[in-house]
View 1 (cartoon, helix red, strand yellow):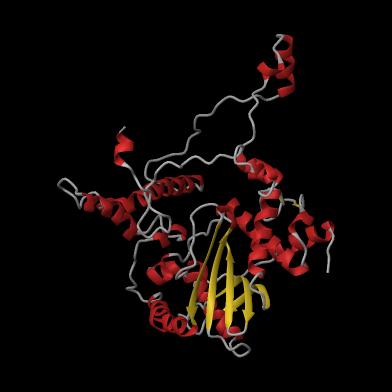
View 2 (view 1 turned 90 degrees about the vertical axis):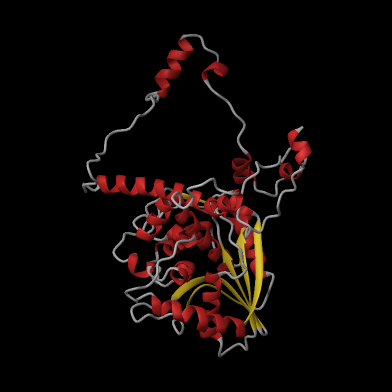
Length: 392
């Protein structure tokens, strides 16, 4: 079954504008409410925020759904544009999206079997606190014999996410078992996380027995705690998307106390304990500043602070008049305009990752990245440092 470009635009726009229900105990926030049960109540009444990056991810997911629904290649929709949807500027399918989404569709389909995609699954047998039940939308499910493979598309270019012990996908696997367990004799699941823009594709397997044990011993008790008045607050990576993160007293106290714990010269081991907090401290300070500014913009008092116009740079208004003046002054074109070759990312968007130019090792160079520190849990290989070479 094929679909024209005009029909595809209409289908995409209709799908994008559909209201997708969300659960306060959703799988995507599972790491947060499992590790910090108090965050469930702390978020109540706080405004949720979105971004152009989140909207871009939604567009990528819907585009992948279009390809799988009509079984058509991504290149057939190169240049497709969805105007002004969900409050954001035009979305357009460029070569970068063609390559990345086609790669996701191909990798998801390699497993074979019965296919289901972008469907809602319910795992409320284990996630129901009396106020909210757990459910969520899965990207891609493939059922074959006794094994089910679930693939999650993450279109962002930020933090790498890995399949091993992935809470979001394990919750989804519970939902798949609940929805389809009577039709398929499941023995286990393969979890795949596909991040095409980071060239990252990881998989991990878990047996049905281990999944159900996790659900009973870890998930169910945490769900009960979410509505307890004395539910614990815990600070960790899961704070990133919590709506209460900037106002959370536990997190604020940790940020302020981190410097008080070391009153003598810190050892390397002490330093290792402090380092993980530095990124959080920077983020917390930025978010606090943004929150205060948004409160002032709403007309709310924030101490004696006030909102004023910041510094700005001068810009040309009527460029045609500027060009005319420059030409009159006998400036050459090379003096009037700054020319610069487009970057690698922009070239990929225009040409696609598979273009011959990107396969030429004399043209595409990848120098070593600047050394950076990451926790020991990071999957990347440690750099081997030659001390003599570094000092020489």
